[in-house]
Length: 314
Image (spheres, rainbow, N blue to C red):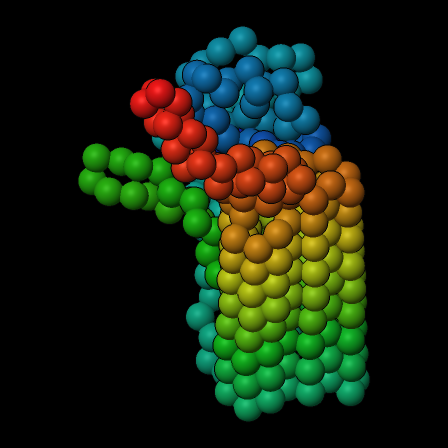
């Protein structure tokens, strides 16, 4: 998430009422999660296990819960609760705004695009040309949709990221200030849910096709010309490269990369990154050829046991 105008380190510290280390005029251009940070961004860290990763990331402002040695060219914001203060900044720079119309006055809709009845289209949404948005679709604020896109009934674009911190009093949600971006020539089936990024974009690449009842988690990037079948669930921060095929009822773990040309057979559970142009099956998933061999061996176990019993009786 980039700010509309640059801020100084002192201004940000005042917003969250915390101390800072560095020049008070140090430029702050935005805020992002660790996997998408750039120079000028704030990143937060609240566990010693991840201090080095945050301090050595591309981020130049680290919101941290302990004063540590500050790397050259960077600044620190010292907070007793970085998670809380990151939410405070999200609320400030990307606040929730209630709607008064089914289609916001700030939404931009291209020529020859059809919006069926009972759709909700939020603030600052952009929809391109020659799209069809079927009834009862909800498109939350800041979503970007390209040209020649079809979205079927009941789909929700831009719901909150499923991202919580466990506290003694319960779960505290990390607020979502990112977007959903749908590129050209994408088809999205009925009753799909695509969550917005926490600070960046959840993206569906050009020419990809999604079946009904698919869940795409926050900050996940789907490549071009991917095919995803019904009841697939993809967790947050997954990278799905181009020309990937995922068949029905597949579950995908967060933070992995599904390489270009991968095919995942139905009812697989994928917990690791894949190799290009390989086929996977099973839960936990492995290369399909090896998995099918394992299944053949398993079927032979009763016969092997029976033979062993006969040999014991001799």
